[in-house]
Image: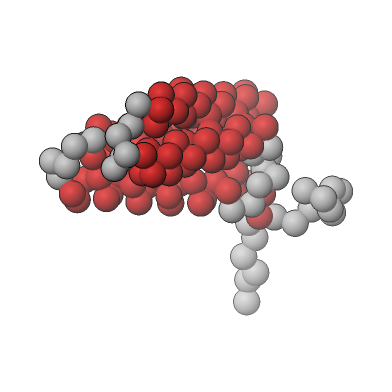
Length: 142
């Protein structure tokens, strides 16, 4: 019986260049979402009473995602589950936006979120974000 051994790709740290590129992509996602947050604040200020809550909810989501992307840019292999939560959440929005069709804002939002999914998935691979799940003996607080 042969024991399976993990491949170097799944266990090795990323190269310095790949890590920097992945972190830059996560920072770009944070910056872009921060711009959406500022725009959302302006929309909320000018929203009618019947849209006030939904605009406030949306703007708080932008703030949360901008912070999560920043966290991933700063600590890409020390945030187990954050990559996956962000990817699943944004992918769900893309699918939902595609399914509901010609609803105002849905198509544009789905396209933007699809772009974010592509950027974050690329950053995940470049930074080897899955390594956050591996226990470490040299830094137990990781």
